[in-house]
Length: 248
Image 1 (cartoon, rainbow, N blue to C red):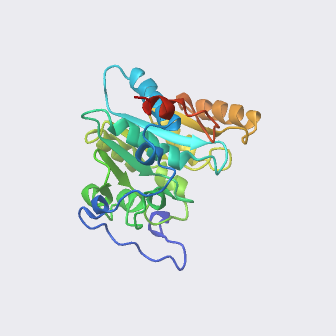
Image 2 (spheres, rainbow, N blue to C red):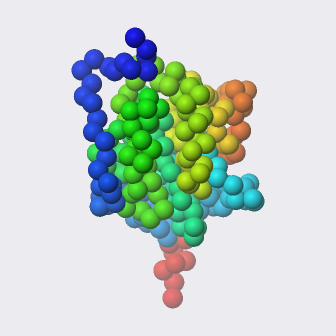
Image 3 (cartoon, rainbow, N blue to C red):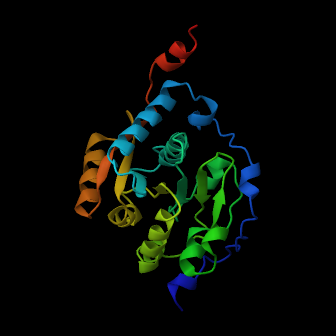
């Protein structure tokens, strides 16, 4: 039997999303600074990262960007959401968040959404693009969840169908941000990085050993990826932006 059709034993099949269900669910997670602290220094740093990415794309072509980290727990999923929210502030920009972490998916959790059919079902041909992608309560931001967790994620992510799906995303969205597993222990990030237009390496400040960061950067590029830069998380910064915004 093909691995594309197998499920983990005991796994419960996911339901397809209801039309517009995610639009009515507010994003309440406190780490989403672009919504809950839009004048903060951290929010400004995400806008700065957005501006750098836009500057690297002067022709304004649709782009696919992988978000990964060296180790698990560095904040890449939250960083991906905040970056998507910052991108959506630019008029006319439509952003798709794709949860390609088929080991420990978390985007739906941070957005407060129920798990639904997603990337796995889309790649298997069990769900249409229109049913898999959900518009969120944030204008201009949509999500494609991970869906059912397959036994062999690399086989699905490395398929020709994945390349076709990425091309179809570009017909609908300005930027596609792809959340992947940590790169040092799971090969999926390198696999997806070789297909994407660029990679953002998320690094938890004062936590991730420098040699791990360097090793991950070199590995991603050796595998054919284009590392655009780094996004630092857990930085203890003075919130000068909020102080300035509060002045008369």
